[in-house]
Image 1: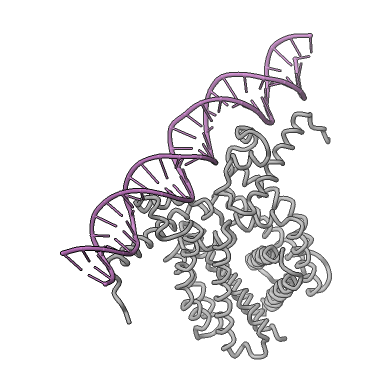
Image 2 (image 1 turned 30 degrees about the vertical axis):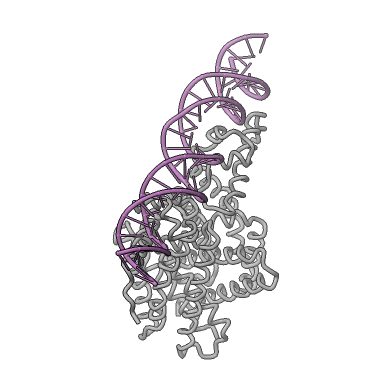
Length: 208
Length: 208
DNA sequence: AATTCCAGAGAACAGTTGTTAACTGGATGA
DNA sequence: TCATCCAGTTAACAACTGTTCTCTGGAATT
């Protein structure tokens, strides 16, 4: 079923990706609501009007960035929660996975953290929707665990949201520590690990 | 020692407050990094150049807003954590206090949530510093609790940060539910309450 | 009463912004 | 081969931006 794109479509997608890349770079030092259309086209090296061939507005571009940043993350989230091993191993592995992701895609993480409560409504809504999906998926994985026996659906979703939010808090901490010395990164790892451990303890005594 | 301000100083402070109020209102629909100096002066009803009599830049104004939004919050945080009563009562009271604060100062809460990871470095730093102070204060209160016996300083601070972050997550949820029907606000209250309860359970079994 | 001070006004500056319209030239499909 | 399509270009628009310098009039100081 894989149909090779025509030269034309291929070039268009390439330009579109250049817009996304340039915007993401520019957004490291500002918010989406101050990102100018001309600013982006200048960075890409095309005429301002070329922008409209791909996006209606910078808000539209922002929504596309949300998909790029979070869309491909779903498989990882599933495996993060569902990995086997005892509780302590799973925590260590989850934190490490987050740290690696921040190292690999710092600009994406910064964008999501920044625009989650940012000044552009459609983008906020897109992030909210994706995070709700994450929570649903985490909930599904949690439900498979024998520890979830006796838990109501509501409580499972409550815990899933807690995990998702904690994941973002941790990612944001790693982001701030990106340029910091290894010592500081280790401090963050320890903090995040113990916070997750505490939540995990609360989880195992929830039904007491 | 209270010295009545001269007419001149009084008028200046009044104008300064008008700047803060106008900026806060404008920031409900955008981020600080896109807030224009002329935009603010127009809203206040003064000449653009008057801005410089009070602030070096919009970033400077942002830092002043952080102080206004968080500076007066310290006493409340202390009482939130230190209130007497059993665990369940304290949780209910804390959530209610957050809900009331969001109702009373929605724009302040929105500003902090938005600019905590926003595009203006000095403002991010100011918020980070204030939240670190909050965490220290929460830690001090936690240490007074008999339940904290045997806890290391590091673990207490870890828990304090967890509480502070959870407080912000909850505040942000109430903010999104501000215009929503009472039913939705009740749902948020239930969610936040159970999350805090789970953390509280983890806390009480931490030393097991 | 005379002098200094200073919050705010006014005008002007070079640059920037988003959006429109009409175009070009190479890929596409008949 | 020839007509159609369409990603990207060019030019122009009114409106807006931050910042400078100069000025003013009433409060503050002497």
